[in-house]
Amino acid sequence: KIDTAMEGFATGFNLEGNTKPGFSVENEKFKLTFSGVFCDERKNIVSHGFECCYDWTHVMEMVLDATEDYNSMADVEEKTEEALKNWLTTFRGWGLLSSMLPVEKHRYFILSLAYASANWNEATGGPYSVEKIFDTVRYVYENCPGKEIRHLLPRLGVWFEDVVEDTVSFKVNERKKSFTIFLNAKWMLEIKFEVEKKRVNTNLLDLATEAVAQQMTIEDDINRLEIPLTLFDNVYDKFKDVEWVRSHWNFKAELELDDEEFSEAIEHTDPEVLDEAETTENGTKINDEQDYPEYTENDESFDDVQEVNNETVCEELLSDYANPDVLKRSVETSCAVEDGFALLTSLGAIYLFLVIFAFLCF
Image (cartoon, helix red, strand yellow):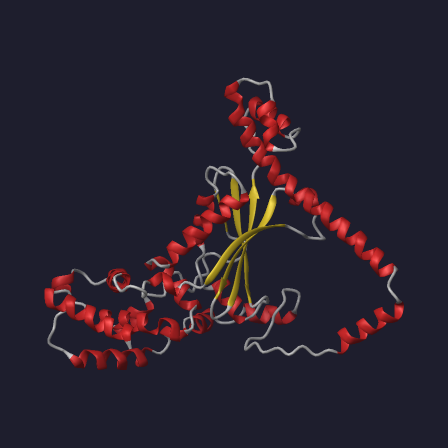
């Protein structure tokens, strides 16, 4: 029972690949597309596993929810980060969180899940479910000061970036931005999405207020407009849309300026210095300490990794759950301490608390 039960805690992982790169969700004003995953700034077997074996639907829905009542990109980033922190500590987010953590950081929590799963009493606790087991163990941890599950969260961050693709015109990309979720634990993961802000004009009022907003340089200029008070909200809303597109063109101008400055610097640099720098770059061997080979999408080797058996990849990501014999021995040892108590009776609940508390303290 414990073997299959522990697999149930790996929430979000599956072999079907429901959200492979290219999968998208959308609402009235935004479209979000899953682009892929980078592990330690490269494509490797781990990034491939998160692309083909993890369902990113819940995470994508969180990002879309953050775009409701859109105010600014910074506002979306803040809302997404807060929602992600809360979600990772829930049953649905535990699969992703536990797959990223070093085993020494959450081994007691996993052992607690295994113990509670092996000793669940349906007569007193109701029908068995892995979610109920998780919530029970989580409740115990939440009531141990300093041991709350939020302390397991890795460093994380989210940010927008303007899209840069030499093969695509800037006009095509003016409404698209890259959106990154960064998680730094056992690996440094970058989950990449593409966010497109739709141009929504359904009537003449939308077109008129868009034209007015495009003439505004800063938001404060809107207050000086001599228009009916009922139209200010419409203009403000369109100005946010204009700012989204304008940031793209500002970024393009910065790139062109940097290219010009770089070209000028090269022209005024001593050729001998350039030759020495090129020789150093070509002759330096980078010490790669990563355990996983790097793949690029233009490499033939990347085609090979695409064909890797998904089950093998998932086992790599969920190595903490991959050896049930270890968990079984740990649970059997714990069970031998006091085999007579029933879980979730008045005495059993106290006993479970004490057992897990002992794990936390030593």
